[in-house]
Image (cartoon, rainbow, N blue to C red; front, side):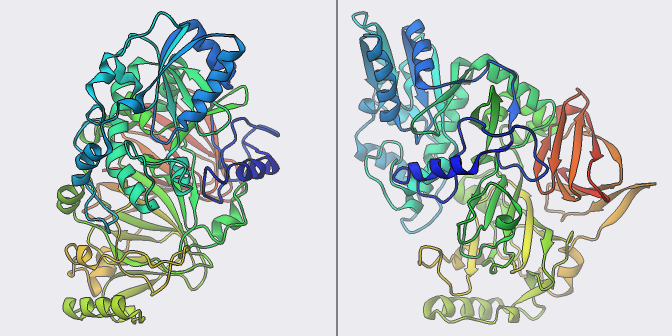
Length: 602
C-alpha cells in the first residue's frame, strides 16, 4: 500500500522520547492511493472488507460504556497510563464514574519477582538465558483473582497486563504491541520489564523480554484467546484501532487457508549494507545502513489487517494459536504453535563482513537455552557484487587449539588475524545456496544480499571473531569463544566443505517454459529448497505442508490459491502458502523468466 512519506516522517519525529529508532512507525491509517505497488511493500495488509476495524479511543469508550464492566488486558510494553488517560477523558465527557483497578498494584514485590526470574537470565554479562517455566499468574498476589465490580460506579475496569486473571465474567479487551515497537520503546527507556520498576541496559531488558516476559505473555494470550471480545492495536501512543474477535477469527481463518505475508521490519548493524536502502521504498534513507530485514522471523513479526483504510496488527503467534493445523498441515503435530522456517535478509552490499560464527547443536540449545529446535541455516545469494564471498568451513589443516589461541589473543589484544588461515572463503554468485547446519563455522562476506533460509531460532549466534570493530554505539560486540568451541564441528573442512556444504542444483522437472530446480539441503536440515522457474505460469500442490516463497528473479507474480484468493507479489517479498491452501497457481506478470524460491518441511 502507498503511504505518504511526509506523514511518516512527522510520526517518527513526534515520539522520539518514547521510541528510539530511525525506522518509521507504521501509520494507523492508509493514506495516498491504495493498491498493490509494483515494488516491495513494507506494509502488506490483509483486507477484511468495510466496517471491521474501528479507530480512536472514543469509539472504544463507547463500547465499554455499553458493556459497563471490562477487563483491559494486553502484552508487555503497552503505555497503560496513556490508555487510561485517553479513556478517562472520554468518560469525563459523558460525566460517568469509573472504578479503575490496576493490575500493577497486585504484582508481588520486586524482590520476589526478581528472585523468580533470576534463574532464567543466565550470567549478567551473557546475552542468553533459558526460557521461563512458570506462569504469568506467579507474578501476582492472590488478591488479583478476588476482585469484583463495584455497583456504585457506572463503569468498572481492570486494566493492565494480566487483567484477565481477575476472573470476572466480563468481556476482555486485549491490547497487542508489535515486538519491534516494544524494542524501540525499550531502547528509549519508556517501558521496562514485567514486575520491574527500573529500566536496565537494553540488552538486559531484551534478554528478560525474550526468555521471560514473552514466554509468559504468549502463553497467557493463548490461554485467553477464546475469551477475548475485542482485539486492539496499541502501537500508536495517541490513538488506537480495534476490532471484534469474530472478525479477527474470520480474518485469521481466511489467511490460514490461502496466503499470508507478515509485516517486515528493518535494523541497522555494525556490518550493514546499502542494498535495502537503495531498493526498498518507504524506508528511512537517513540511516547509516541496514543490516537485517525481519522478513519472516515470526516470533517478532505481525500480521496487518485493513478495513476502511484503518490498520490493525496482531502478532504472528495469534494465527498459530488458532490455526496451526491449517498452517502446518501434516507437520503441526511436530511443531505445534511454533512456525519452523524463517526468511531474513543479511545486507552486506557496500557493507562489511558478518562475524565469524557458529550456532548451537540441537541438544545444546535445548539443554542450555530451553529452545525446541536449533539454528540450522542456509545462505541463498539473492544479489551480490563481483567480489562477494562467503566464509564457510575450515581449512584442511585446521588445528583447533591454534585456532582458539589466535581468537583469544585477538580478543585480548584487539589485533586482527588472518581468518583465511583457518576458515575457507568461497566466491558467491547470484542464486548460490550455502549450507550451514549447526556447528559449522561461517560468515557472510561483504558485497552480498543474503536471503537467509533457516530454522526459526534467531538469536543464538556464537561469535568468535568480529574483525576487531565496534558496533554502531561504539561498543565491542560480545564474543562467545567458549560456547562456540562447545559446538564447532571440525570435521567440516577441506574438500568436504565443497562436497557437503555448497548445494548442487538439480533439475527435477522440466517442460517448455518451465523447470523445477532442487537445491538440496544438508541432512541435518529439516527443510528443503526448490526453485520454480517459469515464463508464464505454474501450478503447485501443497501436499499438506506449508510453503515459504519469494520471487528471486523477475518483477512481479500473481498468486491464486484454490479458494480463489489472488495476491500480487513483487521481487524480494516473502509470502507463505499454508498447507490448507491445497494448491496454488503462480503467474509471471513481469518481463523475462520468473524464479521463485520455495522452502518447505521435509
